[in-house]
Image (cartoon, rainbow over all chains, first blue to last red):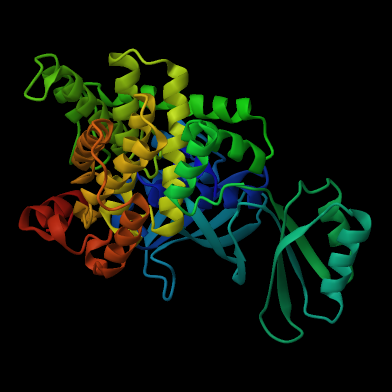
Length: 222
Length: 292
């Protein structure tokens, strides 16, 4: 915590949790999309998000974040129009996602190149977020650090291979948080690795080359 | 390095070195963030500029909230301020500024959370008024925002600045305490008087519940920025007059936490009680969300 957490952030109102945090959830999806052309998004709003999104502009905030705007961008207010102008289809669905935090959004995105993905996360107060799921798998990160998601097969030694490579090839990298989840023994697994530093350009490609790693995604600080 | 675990720590250190709390905090924060003090000062200066912009935005005649429930309060109060009202030009204009910023927030305009979006009108209402209507130097006003921030950090550490955790006392109460300390500093008060003002502001909002109609940051939030501002000014004036806080700031902060914990969930930003569940509160909610 520092003094600018108290005098700040500079943000578009009206609510740090329902507006600013929603933009940041959208921005996680923007990082997943990674400059590819977005065709359509289906946004499911749960709990308090579902009940109050119109009055808080949560819908505009999520969409603005998905399009890459920041929580202080004046464009948030007109995000629905901007999305239409850019030819992005959007749909908001209200549904109670069981067991989810009261301010939860699930964003299902479809790209022009045919790929799609789903992110689920919550706005947990004061503009802070927690991403819970990517493509159906449990993750846990808050977007305040650069985060690397490593999808892999659940095999002995994969974690060691990834972290050893990170250390030997990029000695300055420091891991600040690590989370692993898997669907079943020997099945698909996902590592969430948060790092203090700026990730080197080659890092993600280097991780992808490791045995039993199926994909790696870098989500820069949102 | 400062710990920001008590107001007394800030006061003792500043008085020992015979400097303002803001000077102490700027120096400390620059060290802990590994930045030059000037860089931090300039960042704060930008926030002060945004506060002034939010005031201008929120004073427009056609200002309207997203839900349509509120709007135009800043404009009306600003018009009225020209007459001097009951509390005089300075106070009525300051109230207009607090309303304008809170209204700007409700209409998806740009604001500085201080410490939160719901309480964003109090600090600008107080500080921009000293700057524009009392002729204080911008530098002194911007510096005082570091004092306000430090008070906020102690409250966040020892209690809470979130309505969902501590009720409105944690949002508008904290903002008011932060502003009161900053006002005293700009006016030339000693660090111990900043702490007294902070203590009195918290004492005077102890137990205030968070009961937003429809869960929106509008009713009663916008007007509570005015009461928070009035308490900040009166607490600062009492401290400057030499009136001591009977209960020290740190104990007030501790009590605020205890009271916040004791409040039922229905009175902590869930729209489950207080004004939110009055017949009119429910009616307004249904109007916005299309229920009948």
